[in-house]
Length: 90
Image (tube, rainbow, N blue to C red; front, side, top):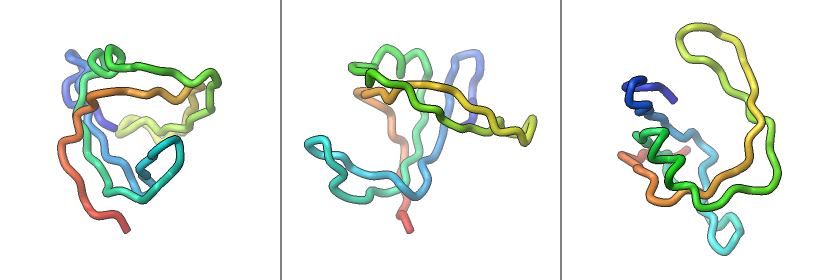
């Protein structure tokens, strides 16, 4: 993910291979890689459910360092997320 407008908290990102469609609580198929562009404020307003457990999620800071950090966060169900394009997977 990259901030495209830090003042507005607008960011863009691309899923990598390993994106799946979940139907009735089960993985049903592999889907295309997805590019998204969204504002953090809009994402947070669109959260409709949070899992009752947190996961350690690794991430890497872009451009400024090559360190890997982690954050603990629950999975979130977000409605009306802005997918801007898609590409074929593997």
